Amino acid sequence: MLIIGQVIIKLTCPIIIMKGVCKMRVIKYLDDHIEEIFLIVLLTGMSLVIGLQVFMRYVMKSSLSWSEEIARYMFIWMVYIGISYGIKRERHVKIDAAVKLFPKKIQKYIFVLSDLIFLVFAIIIIIQSKNVAMTIFELGQISPGTGISMGYVYIAIPIGFTLVGIRLIQNVISKFRKIKLEKGE
Amino acid sequence: MKKILIISLIVVLLGTMLVGCGANGANNEQESSQENDQEKIVIKAGHGGPENNAYHLGWLKFKEIVEEKTDGKIEVKIYPNQQLGGDRELIEAVQMGNVQMTSPSSAPVASFDKSFYVLDIPFLFKDREQAYSTLDGPAGKKLLESLESYNLKGLAFMENGFRNLTNSKVRVRTPEDLNGLKIRTMENEIHLAAWSLLGANPTPMAFGELFTALQQKTVDGQENPFELIYTVKFHEVQDYISKTQHIYTPYIMIINKDFYEGLSDENRMIIDEAVVEATNYEREISKQKDLESEEAIKAAGVEIIELTDEEKNMFKEKLAPLLDQVKEKAGTEIVDIFIDATN
Figure 1 (tube, each protein chain N blue to C red):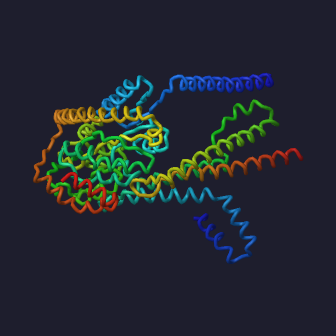
Figure 2: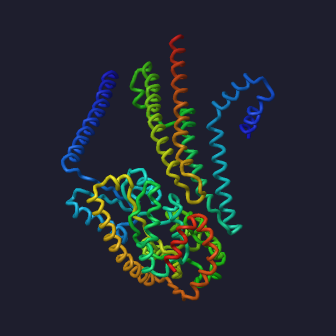
Figure 3: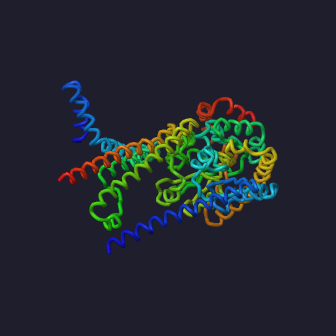
């Protein structure tokens, strides 16, 4: 709720305060919370749709044809946005046993290296999945229940991984800054 | 001590990397030399049926004929049991050329090519013979041709069979018996609308979840051909089967269009002939298996209810308004062709 309130404040602020300052604030806000916004909306939507389907099936006796599908597609979107959130929070599974064998000085660089490798992987996925999604849009496959183009499901992968890429670059930069600072001391 | 550890670790890591590269390179070379020597063409074909199913046997027949006639120059690799994905994924893979052939049920094809909704018209075919003659005739050809604008080439219609209604609550003879019955349908608006018209409470659900749903009474009934009911063991959780035979479902054999057009004329002819032969063979077995499954289900203690023509007509009348909806989805032209062909 707090977040939603803040969104409203941030989005309406261009009218109220000076535009330049506000723009920075909005960008900062999105930088901090963009994944959270998506994840909250998607998870809430998913639960509501499934709940609605149960209600329609058992109480109204007329099931919905689109609910399960929509929930599934929301879940797919959630997964790919979630990867990016995991990177931002540095919560992805890492095996640090091997890293700990190296001297302290090198350890930091190895974490940066792992981020860079991940970045290369993300770029490959972005290019490949974008091609697949575009092909699906062109061939016009639709989902059987809702009738929306399946391309909207597949496009979750390039968009999700673009976010992943951005977060990785941010991570690499901040890690370098940290290393520099420590050296300065 | 630590230094030695680190160095050995790096050596091992690099070593594995190099070994990996080496093996890959060797493989590639081997493959390309094989291609050059024999110009071997591999057809990867995936489908969703179990291995004792009629339509896997049909595929085996296809493989046998193609490999024999081309002296092994074309190799057919069959991947049954959804190894390469379900119907939807496989059609997509064929479209993109990752897999060369597949044979989905007709309903999933409709989300790629709307014309295929025409096969969802209830009571379209009176019996098997009519289904064969219509699907093999100009109407079926026209339907298969429509696939070409989606980078697919339709080859033939194998048989899945007539669908029958099963449930665990009442003996269904007339539409009135269906009142309020929860019936699983495919995720397809036409099917959903059809069961609503009949007064049932249709619930779309993925096939994989169906057995548990029937067991736990999330839904009361479902509809599928006898062979499938028996192989998936739905008879263990259902008490009554009404022989409604409301929809005839074919399996549609499709091949990637670019791949097909890239074949030599000779090879294309061999494939076309093999498809016809395999289809006829599959239909024979399917018919036989349909009867066998019905007997086996009966023996397992499930009551099978034969419907009279009169009772079937009651269903048909109630479903008449559905035709306009199908026309809207599939296009008037193809629906008219099929209605003309079956009357």
